[in-house]
Length: 439
Image (cartoon, rainbow, N blue to C red; front, side, top):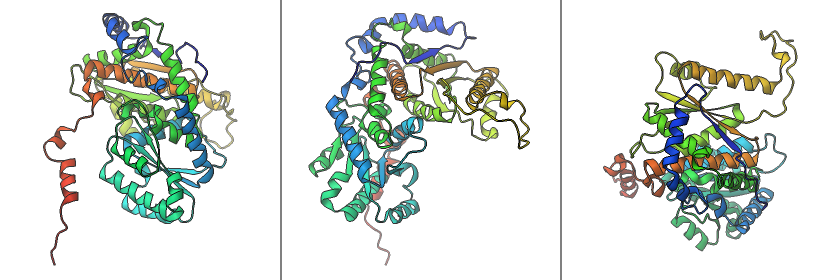
């Protein structure tokens, strides 16, 4: 794979009205110079920083071969994983997937759309005689519902295609966690695409658990990884305080410590909404830790005004915003009004310009409500820049976790509710309890 250019495909901008924050970030970044060099320097110790380089070329080639085979031999590909893994894969497809795919299989996310009792039954009926493949996105532990769905769907594929062909049609894609399911599936003759670094779910988009579904949808996984590698190389010769991911990670923490504990995540246009969904998932950290951290929340322009606008009315919010943009591609010209829609002047601009102005108006609304606004800009809306942005967000999370709660990236602990004997332990007991005999 060709070596990427040493330039950042993602740029970070402070709110121009905030005169103090850049200096605070500069000062803290300078004081953390030796730690930053250890984490993300020429010989980084942070596993999340080495993530784009961990997959060997042979592993990536095998992933692409599996994707091509499943696409050629399937009418439907079922994707099943934990909510986090499915969300990571779906977000990338939303940003880069073909708008009008020509041919190819239909991809269905089971947990996201089909895991309800009635829906799963209808799905099995609909599958009928169609050619089916099943992709399991493997995390540290499936929930009981995930495991139940996997067993039911695996059995359906086996009844439809037979045991021998099922071994080619059922593939597990790992996210880096050490999962017993992967070992058992390999012993059963299934194909397993692993990631060599043990990392938790927030980093899944650039592992086989994110790359295989993307490839199945027609997205170039090579471009995603090369964009991430390019973003990593762009940091090698920069001073710590000038690295965009460092600046963004510190700006988020400093704003939270100043009382802005809610972070709205918005984007220019519906296409980039997938990126803000992934940013919300990646950046979320436990509240408990050594520093205050903001709670990321997806900003939805399509939400009803009664929900959306109420956040920006009344007293100034203890919040800030992060806005993600990319250059607007060529777009259709808007014709003159022939239907009486009541919006004069639209014919003077293109659809892309209108989308851009609407985004600018949204950001202006945030600032008017008193929110500091940070901006992240992608160089282009393509696989390279998307991979770079994913890696940028993962670096920002990794740095924040290091300074706030290192154990959050070492192991995701059970919540206090579960530790007190409720939640999952109670569910485990209910599953194992004998059937009641009332007759």
